[in-house]
Length: 287
Image (cartoon, rainbow, N blue to C red; front, side, top):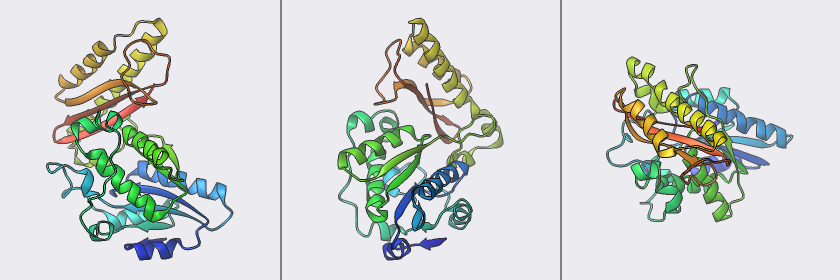
């Protein structure tokens, strides 16, 4: 496995690649990230006999952090990340310094449509998806992948990236990887490392609240009776009573994340974000 820190080093490492499969990350990797790398590896091996490359980027992107968020304290674990990636089929790691990826202030930015980017996560983290879209578009330009793999845990982010690729006419196939969970159901996240032991034991309640809402949505739709606002509030209150501070717990349509207003036969998804102690967790379940 090669580790490239500059654009020139990356171009040299990818020279002659017949297929490029890309997994963008911010590092501090867990098994969920490694699952995505394994998907990339399998795609390359299945599509080309030789010459394909799997690429992972490790870059903590300042543009997607608000001033009060954890950019400076976000764990940087490059050596361990590289060892994990190499063991899971990665050919090239692109780990640029900030000055290499942003050699001057980033005045040009990608502005995703507000109806998709200013709801849910975007409502509580203004500008987040501008930062995500801008850095991903830049990484796509640099890596020139044929396909890229993103986790479904960041459901809205995956949708934003898919929409950006489609509208910008980028020749990149976007593949969504399923959310990896711990044995108790907690979605794996780099920020889980911020939780105390007691908080870690409590953290599974977010996925349980989502399961409640998902089951209620299926059953209510089947019966033709579904009071979405009431069910959402029950879920939020169940978390508040346990000391959580929920930002949202909501039922949406999968195809555009618009609200579900009653019994629904379309594909749905429940999404939640809530703060436990000082740690903000997000999760979702497709219905």
